[in-house]
Image (cartoon, rainbow, N blue to C red; front, side, top):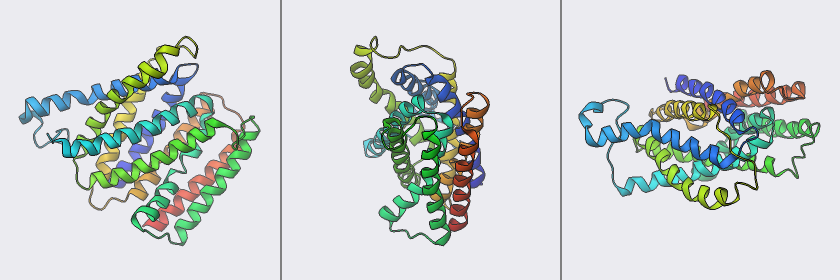
Length: 299
């Protein structure tokens, strides 16, 4: 069951990436991210309030948000900072790079999760997993070649660095999620980390964006901003419940979720009319083959 949930989460993430790309086109990044955190928290706030004031309504359902103390909330706040760091890097990179380049780079995240599992949990990779890692590394170098055709130098482009940093912090978040899901309720983590992100974003907006808003790209409202929050919350809701299964494997779940690159790649090709699709498609196929070997090695 957890594997099916991971596939559903991947599909939802693909639409989330597409709506995110559309929202960021010729738009200010930080206000879009701030509104995303606001709408995401508004989705979960009713469940928090009902669980606190009328607990009998949601008692025993998957939507109940347990009432816990500071000793638990401090772990969720850490989760909020990790995720928000990944989003800030990812949003800026997404705005300035083609979706058909961002997607395959993000798809290398399962490799980083595996490496993290080696370093943090002392896990060892088998032959299939090493093949998957090597294919992912190869695809990254091939993708840099495709990017050069569009004037994107992977070595000196800060937006590529931002996407890589987003993938790295996202991998850290994935490892931390598995740790949290072993002891905490999924709804508790998802609802509260969204709320905490709003409070973290407030000083960022007030200090970094608002004073200089007239000197940078102006903010414009786009209805796809709401779609970002809806699809992200749905994808994460399914993802957290996949991890809550006792036999779930973060390496497999992370790998499957990166299958969202197929959906985002199609959006980049069909709706955003991005270039050099043939060479990027080869890179994407290499990533997918690498993910398949990761799956074989983790069975």
